Image (cartoon, rainbow, N blue to C red; front, side, top):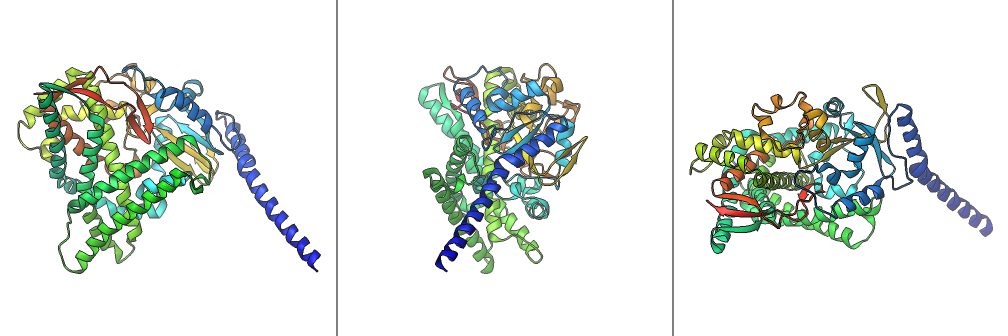
Length: 513
């Protein structure tokens, strides 16, 4: 009997092992090869599949080589930020596929095809291939279908223009503090001073999102930002160096730290939200003009039907931080770098700021009268979009123009490649020419989907007005207090850390006006 039981146990173990082996072979080899064959039969071109790793090692190697050396200010940044995609565009045209591990990724650089993906939000969903990203960008940007629609409906009131206008005093306060610190630095050195403006802009936009999101709890918000910034760096390093499913569960030092940060952020957010909830229960008037207050009020109105849980509110707050701070800091740093290089446009922007604002405290209406500043910001977003590409997942067989995409592939919408494409924008596509936008976005392009730094369609970035108004405030206050130029020590080296950062900072020479 014992022999029989042992034999049966061995057979069961063998069967389980064979089942797992079959699943592994199917995942690593059979399914990718079937998908590759399906795509190639329809005329799509791409790289050949390497088992398990796909193009991850190749892409990492190309990135490592490109970021090992700086570049000229006038060079196209695409080969440095998206080296594999740029090379494939050059050799294979506007649609091609590469591999993210065993998953084929179809990159689109054709505006009409990109528009089709943006319009069909229920066919092209958010990919969930890298679980660690959920620690950083979970929430609205991560959801699909009816859950996305519900969260978008609840969050929308927080980003209506009339609500954002109420946040302008917070923008002013944060910008004033930085400008005053820069004035002290310049005064200590005489008439001018070299400053790496990048960390200052990062901290300024972090302070702004802390104050606008959490009001009187902004100090706890600042701590959340510091933790989120560390988390973003750790995730970026992991994403570049090691991609394979299950890696996030390995007890590595960085993985342990990421989980620890997530716990700390949840405790801080939970405390802030709990404090607001208790105030409501006790009849104490809680802040209602910050993002969290508006969100909680909107969610309370929905809760009688189908509102968000506290856990979901916390996820949205984490997303406020990463998306709200990151986009604006990146936009501001490249604006200052490009205006340092193009002194004529810096002078035109300053003249407009002085004419429209004078020495008055800026408000939302006066900031929206800054047409030249707006043209400049649009052109910076075209040349240096904060996020160089967006991704979508195809989870079921989907008709796509003349093609049929099988379930299991991803689609990459390349913002950077489209916005710098000379065939689409003209021979001067790589040049800084804000006059393109003198009559607005619609007149700047033959096709609206040539310019989409905030995405497009139903899932367009909910915070774009927030980011643009904050950027206008910052540039207006900087321009009327300083002139600035590139320092001899400045090294031009854009690189991709979820968004396009200056690898070696942004050393500028500030002069007090």
